[in-house]
Length: 490
Image (cartoon, rainbow, N blue to C red; front, side, top):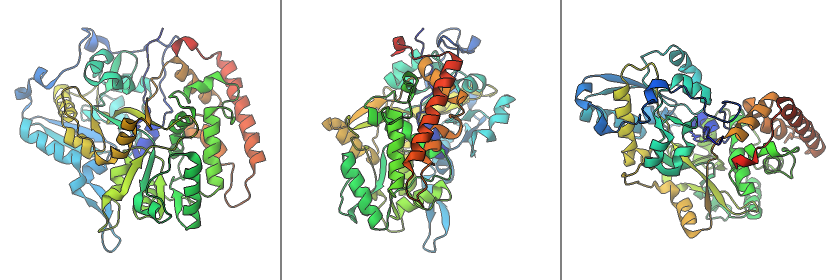
């Protein structure tokens, strides 16, 4: 059975700060052994049509009501963090786009939206577990398929979403039948976010398009006392960007699930192993920060102020860094470009973006749907948030941050890859990594990346030994689970 179980990477979008972890490509969906949907959509979707447009909702009956939206995107509620002339951090509320949209929505429809910021999924999980009606809409980049089925009202079917969003529907959170979180925009996932003025200091006007030239530029930046790439390695989730970069190395979108094909997925002969080795080599050459940034905000700050040149993340981080440039600096110095060609062409991952789900326990689901549909038709809000409106009939506004990539795609020098649609092969790969104790906390990357100590001469023998250990653990776990790559799902 070829039913697709989708848990896009993206978004992660994520999205997120922690958003990021979401967009990294390590899909966490689980389901039935034959790859079929394990949906519990039930009566809500029994008719086959569950999507409601604004015209389908009795908006007059909702006037005077209130809904609550929990989001991890705090910058769109509180405003971007900035520094004043004394170096003190403050929130610029002109960037609080979701707050402004909610106010406009209340003026038009008479429905109040109470916005709450949650740092992690754990902040809202207890409310969702008890079907607490105090939460109506939430955003989350990291639920498993089973959690989406348990906590989220089915928003629409995949077929309904395809009518409005085309192939991007397949990259929304779904179980093969139902979409659980509507993602009304599209975005480009992990690429190169850079400070143009910093690159100019070492003689570059743009990010080079080949790996050799890119590495030469990083060497010049390091020699100039500038951190080439800010990662924020104090946590593991930034390493999940490797999932997208492995696709760029492979020239296809399935480098992560295709690990299941190989007995040596962590070896340099395979896309994932080659990409992890590339990142680790960059670490040994000083391309990442020598002193780990204490939090992700600091990592963004140093790109904004030019102490570091780049980050390898998605479009979501661009407006956040633009809001952190020094006073008097044009925010447009922060740009977004495709990753270099690593030998198989130049690519960028494309996915649906900006997820909104309705809590099963909500007692005002129609108002929740009304607001989500309102979001989907506000191209300016989505552009301000760093995304491109993607709904049929909505004229998109393309943010300036996408111009370099859009121009490269239009010229044919960079090709988009859709985020991989999770099927039983990717689910089995997740299960194998879990069985081998390599999935949690992105250990399948971190265990290798951390072998190299930048304060000492690089010990590649120790690295190779760790590769061998992880390859054996992966194969043993795959054997114990009795799973194998199913070519019929390709």
